[in-house]
Length: 513
Image (cartoon, rainbow, N blue to C red; front, top):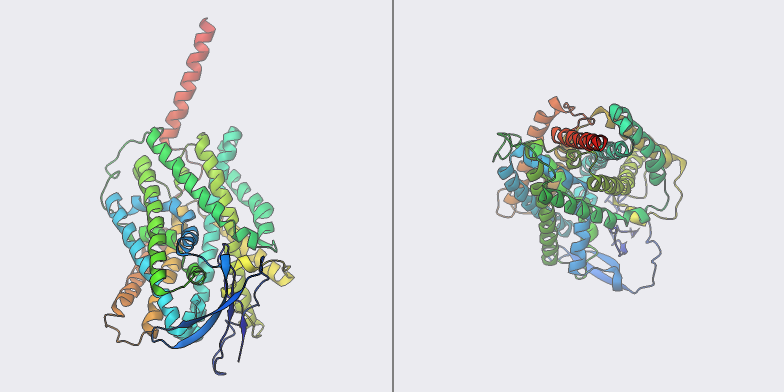
């Protein structure tokens, strides 16, 4: 059968069209039967680009748009960097605190190296099976069970991310409001809850129901710019010496025992596997060699940003580093309050994209298991930046509202952003980044299990499995923790006291005169 497939596209300046090749009637391709290509902004010429697997066999033809729609190697690298560097880096100083400063930095490099390998491995899997999407390689390797497992994890990852976004927005914007209304500081719990509620109702719900998601997806560059600004603000605060933190025996400890939770946070910060094939198919002359270069450049840059965040943030607050680094800064610090606002803006622009992914997975599963109706599209392959111009039906609205308000209801259960990042990293990010790509390659590669070709992939699976199992065993008993959003750090109290004493002295002098 011949299917007209709409391929995914990145959040940037290219559009791809994928036309399927003939497949046998026995194959199940409900996943790949996607919508036609959306109308391009400018007319371009098409070029048929054949793809072959590593054995040289013909697999499928991609119909791509010539001209500016395809990315050069530097452009593809920037696109990938844009998808990697995000809100996860804000937790790196806390990860260094959990693992120990020295060992934490080594662990950060190791996680970046393993992530780099897994991203290259995914594209190798695509060439082996001729299906250039994450769902495609999982279906090719393990059939419907691979699809079910991937669906579960790809729902869990964005849903937990949405919960973490609520925690961050509640924590950050409540501090900004207290700056303008100091009396609200006596009831921070209520202020935080109110902020999350009004942001959910007034901002998140309208954005998630917005019919032109493409405009939000393309705002990812704004998110990257916000993260870079926050990084400079963190470095400025370190160099200015505005924060004086008393050293403790744990301040510069080389190694701590909490390596597993720290690994979860770091993997979450590097998570970008859902965009792998989007960026790969945007490249001119896409080959494995060129993809390796893009991956090395992108992961290297992301590692540099994460390391700078970790070193600057940890050097400032050391053993007091919080899961949300911005929680460490005083409520009357205007530069960091502005950074808090920027961080919240970047998160609110990302929230609808995560909600879109979760909603489409739920829709697919409801059609398949509840309504018993086959669907003509594999919704995990949908790209939000092509979803424009179509009104959301009542069915989708119901699912969207259920997801958004479920995240809202769960988010007040904890003030610990670090715990949410650890949980998402361990339960979803590590399986998606390490375990599933390794399993797919082991299944499709023809060599023996312990051959030189498969051994690194086997190590990837073993590493991911051990970290996930141990992490869940360690993390779940103390998941809620004892975090509080209304705690003022001691060094901030000292600053407030000094300001108050200075004001009283000035007033006394004036009265004496």
